Image (cartoon, rainbow, N blue to C red):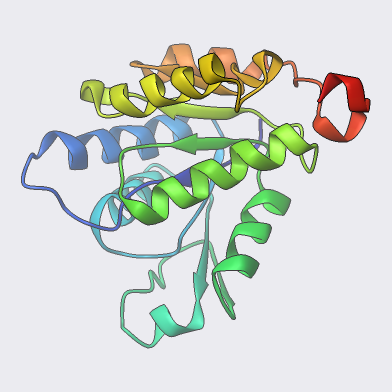
Length: 193
């Protein structure tokens, strides 16, 4: 993996562990020679990931909608800052530029990005690994809900492992590197659906 799209919050939680996690991830990816494609902001976890990666000599490509640039939240220190019209173009660029997706704690926007990466993997728009760093048990309920969707039958059994979740970055990166894509819906016959 040469580059990962890193999804995470633009907020700064009161619990300092989240910002420290973001800095650790940015530094660790840079030290492994893995570039980062992210939301292009300078605030919250997003800013912490980017700043730490840049400080460690890493490549950081920011992709930010023009409406957020004018709000003075853009990180102009990125290796490459790409300004796009809107969120759809932003997420498509994440998919085009990255070899996989790494999700850290975040809010609604982070969840939107994660679920789109999962949905596109199910369908067959990409065959890239989707990793979830479940630090501090942040995603426990989301993972339980994903399991529930499988049990009920809204997520096919062969797609239940698209989300690779681990509590430690090193183990997650190992799993993502060894990723074998699931059979996409586009390749399934009607009786398999």
